[in-house]
Image (cartoon, rainbow, N blue to C red; front, side):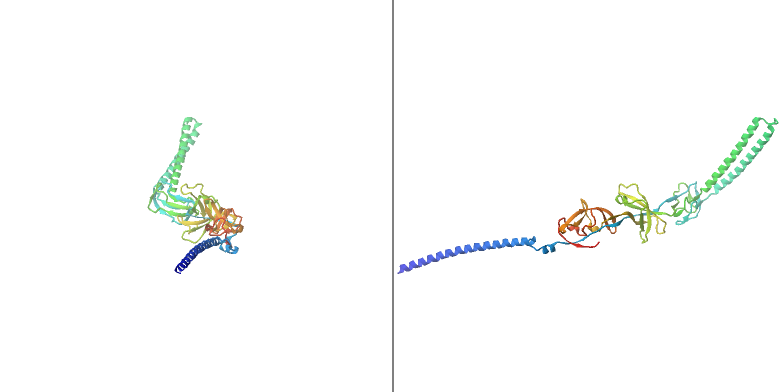
Amino acid sequence: MDYDSRTDAALAGTDLAADSVLTDAEEDRQSRRRTILIILGAIVALIAVFFALHGFGAKEEEKKDQAPRVTVVAPGAATVEGSINVNGSLGARREMPVGVVGEGGQVRSVLVEAGDWVSAGQVLAVIDRSVQTQQQAGQGAQIQVSEADARLAQANLERALKLVDRGFISKADVDRLTATRDAANARVRVARATYGQIGAQIARLNIVAPAAGLILERKIEPGQVVGGGSGVLFRIAKGGEMELRAQVGEVDLAKITAGVTAEVTPVGGAKKFTGQVWQVSPVIDPASRQGFARIALAYAPELRPGGFAAAVIKAGSMVAPLLPDSAVLSDNQGSYVYIVGKNNKIERRNVKIGLVTDKGIAIAAGLAGSERVVLRAGGFLSPGETIQPIVGKL
């Protein structure tokens, strides 16, 4: 009885052990299945995230909403007036320095002031001439002496000629008297020439204006001793004409021709003066790469020589598309713009810049004017990128 009970118990224990082994194997299979399912789920989730980030499977409207919104314009074509902004110094167009042309001396009086208008030949200053006046008086007396000698020589000759036929005077005496008469007449001419020379020297003691104009500067006072080495005593603007000597870069200088108009505004003033370019520098400074454009101006009290002024020079006109600065980009390949092509994709278009004005940049080549051009923010775009174009205004 006891044996059978032990046998049954052993059999029961064996069955329990077998059941335990079966249960552990089943749990391993189930654990592996759960692991595989988790891995598959993670893979599916990653794939879904990938497609979501790259827009695969998104609706066309959603893809459109994700494209950047960019303002574009169709510039068309317009007549563009070119202009060049320059700066420079004001001065007389034709400045005439005036000094002493004679032997000089002490200044007796000065008859003009800076800012006065003078006519050609007008006396500006008078130099003492007391010595020269006495010399001229003495030479006048010498003329009278020479003329008296000449009259006496002529009378002697005439009397001798009457006595030749009677034989009282020889032919040699007549020749001698003729030579004496001719020498006396020559001395008269010399005396008169000397008198005229002294008169010219006296006239040169007056400092006179060589031409009509405006006195810009006076450097002479009564009592001052002046001479040939005294330098410039007056400066005169011929006709009162002024000019602006504008410094211009060599690129812009090539666009300027004589005869074009310009508007000049002196520093510190709001009034504008209209002038005309009358000379373009024939040379370029190799150091600064600049030349001069000389703008002729009529006289005005506001135009003071030596002052500084700004000018806008007309540089011709052209019919071309006009774009703002923000639309035109540049790199090592040159200037370019971005236009909107097929399917609203960005395309690069190389252009050639023409006239530059206050209203924008004229495109000389590369655009017809009907293209949709990116107005701004082109630096953040790249060719081939899709955008949402928004039509703007220039």
